[in-house]
Length: 134
Image 1 (spheres, helix red, strand yellow):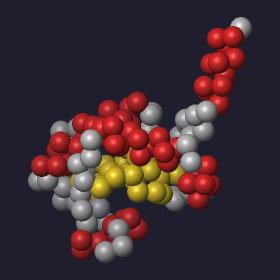
Image 2: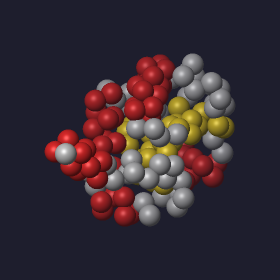
Image 3: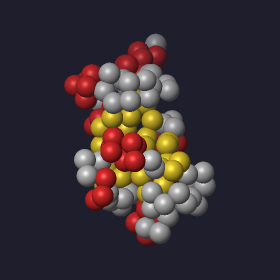
């Protein structure tokens, strides 16, 4: 009985994970970027752990080994995510609410897996950030 109560408390402490399909990762990269190649497996591991779909946007229209089907970046997309689309730094990730299309930046550059996971956990456990994405 005590185990069931503990399990229930643990499940209640996962706010965003209780809403499957509401959030996704957006990943911007360049196929010629060495940091993007090093970062992609970490992102893939994280999105699998959190069951987050990933929209992989390629600035040059080419794939990465971990993301073989790139989404080409249009001017509208780059302007939506980057204040100055002429100075885009990659790799860059964002968590997006797929229903409202509101998003928050997660990382820029080849961050370590633990830092990436920490950023996602902070976002998903912050009610004010989640409300802002509604």
